[in-house]
Amino acid sequence: MKVSLRVNGKKRKLKVPPMKRLLDTLREDLELTGTKEGCGEGECGACTVLIDGVPVNSCLVPTCQVDGCKVTTVEGLSRSKKLSRLQQAFLDHGAAQCGICTPGMVMAACALPKGASLEEIRQGLAGNLCRCTGYMKIYDAVGAFLGSKTEPVRGAKGGTTVPVRSAKGGAKGGSQ
Ligand code: FES
Ligand code: FES
Image (tube, rainbow, N blue to C red; front, side, top):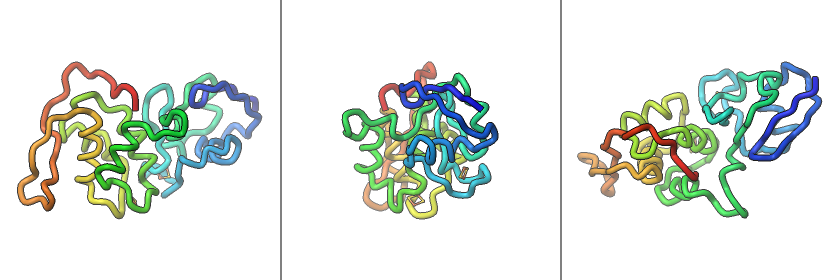
C-alpha cells in the first residue's frame, strides 16, 4: 500500500504493508529509532508519538491509519541538533536513567497544557511506565517545562518539588 504522511514536518511517501505497525515503519523504513519498543502491546507508552498532535502508542497503530496524517516523533522536537527545552528539562532534573521510557514520556508531555497541575501531569503520563527513574523527577521536569508553580514535597529528599497550580485555558505546551 502507498502511504503519504508528514513526519516531523517532512512529506514522506512509503510503500508498506497496510497493517505494518507504525512503530516499525518509523524505525525500519524511516530510520527514526528514537521511538522505542517496550511491551509491544499498548501497555507501557515507550512507543508514544503524536498523530495530529494527539499522543498514541505507535505499536498499536497500523501504518494504513496514518495516511494523510501528521506524525511527530522525538526526533522532531530538537532543532539544529540542540535538545528542545522539554528534553533539556529531563536532563536537568535527572528524569532519565536507562532512557527507554524517555522518548515516550517526552512525547506524552508535549500534549499537556501550560501550567498543568501535578494531577494533570500524572494523568497525562499515566500510560507511560518507567522502571528506573523515580516518577517525581519526571513530574518535576515536566512541571518545570510547563511553567507549573511548584512547592516542596513533604519529606522528599533534596527539596524535590511538584507542580501545584491548575491549568488555565488548556493552551498547548508550545515549543518543546
Ligand atoms: S511498546 Fe507500545 S505501549 Fe509498550
Ligand atoms: S529511565 Fe529507565 S525506564 Fe524510565
